[in-house]
Image (cartoon, rainbow, N blue to C red; front, side, top):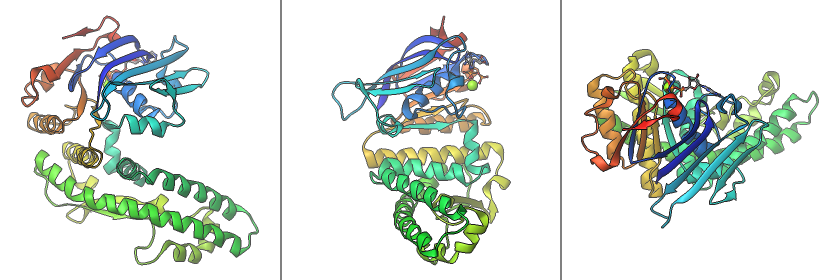
Length: 366
Ligand SMILES: Nc1ncnc2c1ncn2[C@@H]1O[C@H](COP(=O)(O)OP(=O)(O)OP(=O)(O)O)[C@@H](O)[C@H]1O
Ligand SMILES: [Mg+2]
């Protein structure tokens, strides 16, 4: 799957740009020229969200009343390219369309255009709290397990209800138990999906990291969010008093995590910055490999400021790895020379270099 023609209107400093994309696309340009904004536009198309802000309003050009991103996406499963578009107006209205039909939710966009992002926030996978690792894990499960999304939504819903009940001053224990039963039924399924995915992910990650760097001894473990010896129902029942005291459900799949350790220490406390980036890249690439095998299609890779933190040898290793995936790749860098000689495996007609200037308004394509 890949984006063929991409049109971006009134997004950040990009007023109106139309790009013909190849399989590997390098966006080079000065600070503030609009490179990240191009990647942000693609991310918006594939998720309905920005990776820079939780709200979409800052994404709209200061002078405009709304932004639009549209692309033609070609896919082995469809004979002619699919049309995907999103529009966000300043008054808050958001619309996503696939083949002219308005989508019901952003999950439809994600299924149609799976996007993997590597940027400076990706370090959160190592340095941040469990939430980012849980989101990472769930991206993978969402795309390979059709039933995951429904079960995940159910867990969120039941958890909200149970938490609301816990905060009530007087509730009968059997009222809470009804929610314990519902929560544990969905949570055990969610845990099953996540565990199965993790078992496929771990060896893929180890192999991918070996392709990229010489960092040995990283151990990953999946933590499901409650005692590994006991079922969630039993744990929830035992913790009624504690949950009431804290005002929320202390144990459950909403506390799941992946732990990364190296020689018994937390990986982020041991690895250098460059090594952390390589580990993060290996995680994302491993996930893309699993996705490709499971779905028979590739995702789009966005790598913002690829050269940052990496020496030439590791830049080349990462670019070779990305080239070998058969995914469409969109990467940014400040100096185009930083990524020269990095794509020997890519035939010239599959590689495009875009020189980004002032939001591509007078942009040139080299
Ligand atoms: N809503 C907006 N309207 C207009 N311009 C904006 C808006 N939001 C951000 N900008 C500007 O858009 C420009 C492009 O930003 P972007 O982050 O894409 O640049 P970049 O090429 O990635 O730069 P860097 O190399 O520093 O990462 C910046 O000058 C920024 O100040
Ligand atoms: Mg940038």
